Length: 156
Image 1 (cartoon, helix red, strand yellow):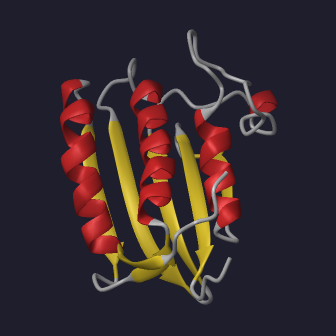
Image 2 (image 1 turned 135 degrees about the vertical axis):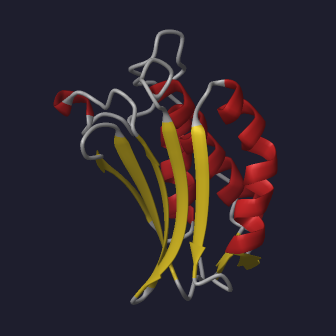
Image 3 (image 1 turned 90 degrees about the horizontal axis):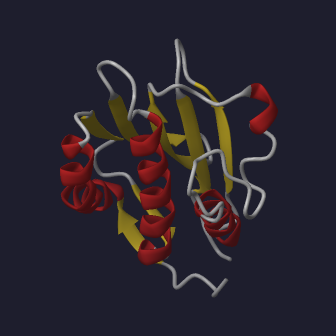
């Protein structure tokens, strides 16, 4: 993993760029896609290309997760908490078996037919390279929520 090339990243612009890249794929799958950034001027110090790759991986997984559900929905939310920035990708897909939650970030582990098992591990490595974390939990009533947390003051 290369060292992140840090710069200020406007998360409103970041979300807008991801919207342009991912919305056609998401809409082609029949899903509703929403983004939110609160507050709208929210920014983080990060490597924009690495951060974008991590979130694209999460969004692609969400697209796969909602493939066979009624009224599929995917959300990207960026928000500020006390001493961290939180980027959340959530879906209302079929969800993940409880046994798999602890193994999702292991390299080459996959729950998808034809999956490589590297996307989530890469997203985790990018979060860690920024002194952050990537976690997963069940969405209610169904689906998954992946949450990347990054420090507000980021100095890897």
